[in-house]
Image (tube, rainbow, N blue to C red; front, side, top):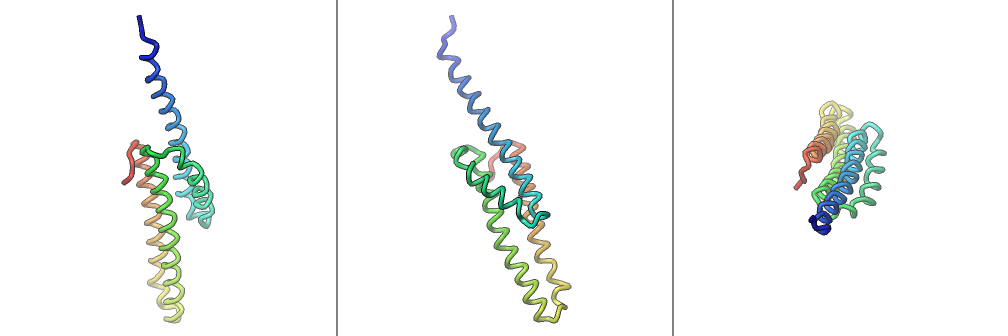
Length: 133
């Protein structure tokens, strides 16, 4: 005879896995939004942050929680670095009568590359089922 309680943990584990699968799909969408954000004047990143803030509580204590934190830090540090890079570009560029802009364009491009690197790195970790930390 089979014990009906023996199969209960298996079905519970499967239910949890389904929930994580749904949340993992949400994270995939958030990574896509963050990846496209630089090309939409960061509008999609703001949408992704709002959705991420609403959904992060659903995955507390799982490896997916680290991905929400990763995307949040990427967004906020990206804003900080973008403000500093564009500020240096314009202020120093204008102080040097535009000559500095020839060299300083590297700063905003470096922020863009850093941002996309973090999004791609996190997305690859998510695909591997690993946490970031």
